[in-house]
Image (cartoon, rainbow, N blue to C red; front, side, top):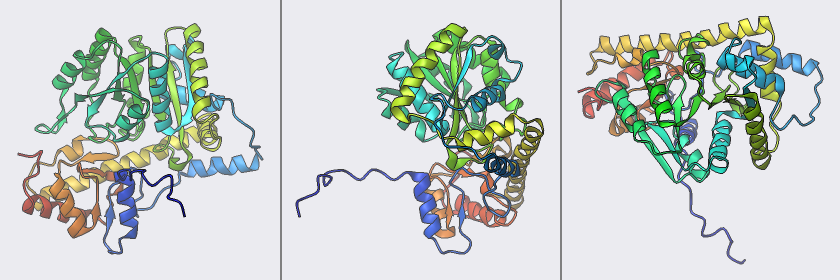
Length: 412
């Protein structure tokens, strides 16, 4: 046979979080623990389909929906409900008809659509991402042909908190026609968010430097359990008169991980320009996925547009957030009781799904090789995967790693 035309295609590097899950699934060790993948788990370590989502899907089946194409911009009932969720029903942007939504393939699709818009329409070539940030931020903008993907300081290893001074200094140095990705709430991977006063300082710099803001909003409700409180940053930027994009994901707060349900919320200064932006986004969508899927958007719209279902959903979001906070407290108390070196109070000060433990690469490797505990090499763990049944095992493993494999790098 002739040689394959694909013979010189290089093997791409593995995607870390999915490689971890594959290795975990293949592992036969009885006490194995997967702390890597960012998905909610019950105290039994199982995925949770929200009851309100089940009810919405049952209703959709009984409605005998067809499978006709949606509008290119997506399901209007979903887009409008998503906008109200992040901006608030009393938002001036909504009242003045200067906000639009584009249904996308999850939060990732929102980010890619924004990247394509900034590159092709605005001709931008520079984007700032936090250090550290979600692993896909860089790749999305790289594949949208951004040449300059820069970092702004965010995590302060000494305080295990926000390096606000470094962040503002880096953004102050941004060249003209730059964009920045800001995590709207529950920063991934650190779980460290700015205070309201710090958000005001960040907005001041972005305004002064005319930096285009893209907020990545993947965890509304997961930080505090209060959907409105978790929307502070986005609503504050609206109140300041910013024109910006918000990438909304419903993977976490609706548990619709594999339905790829997202909304790119576009805030502008007038209804005239918002229609122009939408028209360009529709052209970009047409060249990428052409038309969005119906199921996830229909589920979200069904819940958010029904008063009783919406109230039920808010309770279920709070259930998830409360369990995460409970596991943070339990893990912290057990580490402290065991006398594990370090203060560990950053576990309860951080918020949202993830904990940035401060464990170094060698300690992470020790957890994997000796205890079959799977987590990202940067030391990020999914707090949802900590349960009352495995917390003692995980704490024992961390204690061993910190005690015997060098000092925890962020606790000196």
